[in-house]
Image 1 (cartoon, one colour):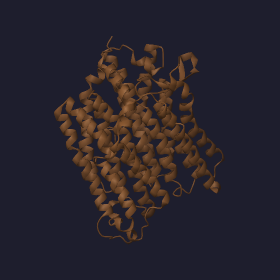
Image 2 (cartoon, helix red, strand yellow):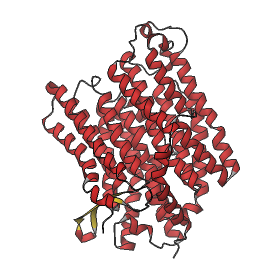
Image 3 (tube, helix red, strand yellow):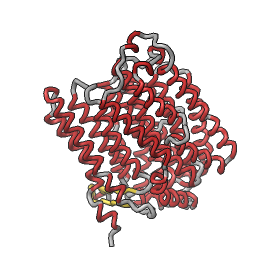
Image 4 (cartoon, rainbow, N blue to C red):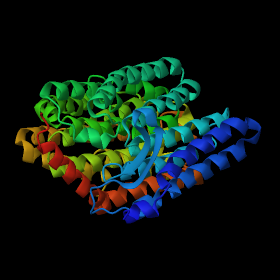
Amino acid sequence: MEPTSQVMGAGLLSAAIWIPILTGVMLLAVGNDRRADVVRAVALAGSLLGLLVTLPLYLGFDPASDQLQFVEKLPWIERYGISYYLGLDGLSIWLVLLTALITVFVVIAGWRVITERVAQYMAAFLILSGLMVGVFSAMDGLLFYVFFEATLLPMYIIIGVWGGPNRVYAAFKFFLYTLLGSLLTLVALIYLYAQSGSFEIQAWHELPLTMREQTLLFIAFLLAFAVKVPMWPVHTWLPDAHVEAPTGGSVVLAAVMLKLGAYGFLRFSLPIAPDASHELSWLMIALSLIAVIYIGLVALVQTDMKKLVAYSSIAHMGYVILGFFIFNQLGMQGAIVQMISHGFISGAMFLCIGVLYDRMHSRNIEDYGGVVNTMPRFAALFMLFSMANSGLPATSGFVGEFMVILGAVQYNFWIGFAAATTLILGAAYSLWMYKRVVFGEVANPEVAGLKDVDRREFWMLMAMAALVLYMGLYPKPFTDVTDASVEALLQHVSQTKIK
């Protein structure tokens, strides 16, 4: 008998992938700037419908089960055993919801700001949204790779067409870094197929491999996923991409695209090469702590708001990778919670910077000062997000970091201590930026003429604020659905797979 969730959710995952993609293709085919309002309305309808079909996935999800749910499997390239194989578990359910939700915010954020090539702009984000949901739900190795690589194209276009003055350089750097990192992954997937005769990811999880094979596979996956996270020292593309990307591009890049790499570690590196993961955990922990400490110091000296938040994203994602490689329940669950929380907070921070940039066309911290005098409602919301970025208790930023630090202390006191002390750096750069931008006297005449957030901006930021507070005050719904899957993964990783 089929699981209830599978019967209830037949086709829902496909709908979550293809509704945004087909809406985007339709806008590319018929949309133009003379019908910009119609284009925006269709884009919003497509993104909302994409979000609505993900809600039954959460409501029908069985948190007690560690098995795949809402499974869809159709033959694709039968000769090589390649299937259109989708499914969700506790590791991916919240990432699918996050992707669909952020897409709605991005469409609303670009409502009046984007006035040229509106149809192409909205289409790029909708297609990107569907592809990212595909990454999080693909359970066939080649299908995963197709979705994973295809996400590069819309983001490359978004940065290259609607970005800042150095957009072409930033777009090329983003594309080359992430593409080159992924090429060895394709080799690894083909090798796993040759060993198992299947492209099913779950079949690869059970494959007995020698230590040498596991190490080489781990390194191949590491190159792709480390660039995507991004981990130190392959992080240098991210600040450039953020600075040049339009507001919506920065929001999607920080809130969702960085999670593709982290998710790859959960789905591939840890379960396929468990012994190599344990053997090389010292390297992953060291790289994570360098990201958290060194990148935190780099963030402190930034003069560009977007660059500062971009570096802060690298530091926060360092906690995620640290949580994965300390191999305990608290750490891994904390890392998944941190991914979702970072999606809310970083998305909100870039939306706030976008609000200021739309009015002043400057991201330099020194061009501001005294914003609270002219934009009090904005200042209050921006303060909440800055505090959450610092890890303030009762905000979502605290929950994940606290769980990872507790898990790290269980693993090794000094690793936990190092991770905990760097919270001070997070507070320093977040609050330093907020103080310089929002408080003080109004020195710039342009700041004196700023208008507070309009109704669209206010309710968009309020919705983000509600999510940040809800997750901070009541994280149970976020941890409950991940519990069984994390426990199963840890159990799997603790069993030797050396043949």
